[in-house]
Image (cartoon, rainbow, N blue to C red; front, top):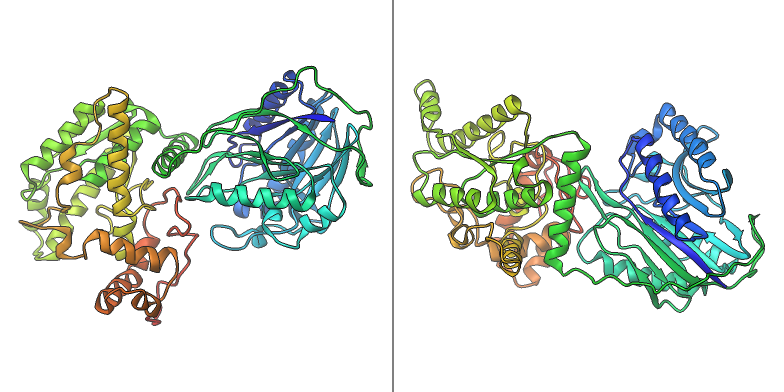
Length: 554
C-alpha cells in the first residue's frame, strides 16, 4: 500500500505557543490539501526546542497541555498529525509526541533516551519514557521514536524493531554541525534496515540561541535506500508516497483499518547537498537572522576595522537581514593605517550598508590625560573605547551589537574584555581563522558568479592580520601562524586530545605547551563572550564545560 506522508520541516519559536500552534495549523492544511494521510512535525514543535529549564516550570507545562488540547480540536479530517509537545505526567515533565486523528489525541509517546552530552541537558529537564508505541493508521502499523531514541544501539528502537512495524516515524530537534548530514543518513539507513521498514526522519529548521537546526529531513526505504530528502536550512513541507506493508504487528492503538490508495504517485525529490562552506554560511546566516528576529531587534551594528573578521561578520549580516538593517562603524585610532579606513569604506560601498566614521583618538587622549596607562593597558584602552562607542550607539539607536571575534581568538584569549568582546551576538565565534578566510573567498566567488560586486575587499582577505593597537603590530607577534595554530586548536579543543597525544602526532612540544596554556588561561574570558551559532562538533559554551578556576595542567 502507498501511504502519503507529509514532512513538516518548520521553524518554531521557544515559548511562543500561539505562533507555533498557527504553524502547525497552516502546515496541517497544506498537507491535507496535498492528500497526505499523515503529517509529521518536529520534536516539541508546539513549545519550540530546546526549552531548557522552562520544562521544569509547572505553568509552562500546563500551557503546553492546553495548547495541545486546543490545536487537536482544530486538526480535523482524514489526515493524522504527529505533533511534538511538552507534557506533564504525574507531575513530571516529558518530551512527548501526540498522535491526533479527527480532532482527538488518540495516542502519546514519551521520548525514552534523553541526551546528556554536548549541548544537551535533557536528564535535567525531562523524565524518560519506557514504552514503545505502535499505532495502526489505514492498516499500517506505525512505530514512533523521538530524536535521541534513534541514536542508541540496542535501545527503544531495537524493541520497536522486534514488534515488526510497517513504518517508523521519527520527529527530531537535531542541531546542525559540520558533516552531521552524512552521520544522520548513515544512522537512518541503519535503523530502517534493523526495523525492516521504511523510516521517516523529520527535523526542524531555524535558530534558537546558539543552536541552528538545518532541516535535512529524510525518507528511506526498508532497505535503507533514500526515497526523498528535503533541502537544508529551508522551511517547507515535503509530501512523499511510501510503500508500506500492512497489518504487520499487534498495535497498541487502532485509528483506522481501511487501506488507502493514491490517485497519482508523486515523484520524490532528493535535494542537492550543500558543500562545506555553503553549509557553514547558511548555518550562521540562519542563526543570526533568527536571533535578531526572534528577540525583536530591528537592526545590527558592526565595528568595521577594514580587517577580515569584521568584514565577514558584516557580510553575513547583510545576507541574513538585508543591507538596510546593517550599520557599520569605522573607529580609527592614531595607529590605524590608511588602508584600514579605505577597506571599511570599500565594504560599505559594495554592499550598501549604513556607514559612519567615529575617530576614537580624542576619546583615548581624554582617558590618557586622566589615567596613566602604558603597553598592553594602553592597547586595551583603545579596544575598550571602541566597545563603549558601539554600545553607546546601540543604546541610542536600538541596534544589536555584533562581536567579530573568531574561534582561534576566543581559544587563546586574543581579545579584550569589554573591548572587541562586547556585543549581543557573535556570528563567527565557532569558526577558526582559516575558516574565516575560506568563507570570505567563497562568498566573493558566489558574488562573481552572480554578476554582483564582491562584498569583502580583497585587501581585507590578503593583508596580514593586525589589531593595529600599536605601530607595526601583527597578530603573529603574539600568536603562532594561524595555519599551524588552528591545527593545534582543532586537536585540543574539538577533538579533546591532550598534550601527549599532540606531541606524539608531531607538533612541536614547546608550541603545544604554549597553546594549551593560552587556551586554559582564557576560560574566564570565554564565559563572558556573547552567544553565537554552533557549527563545529565542539563549540565553546554549553558544548565544552570546563572550570575557570583549575590547577590542572596538561
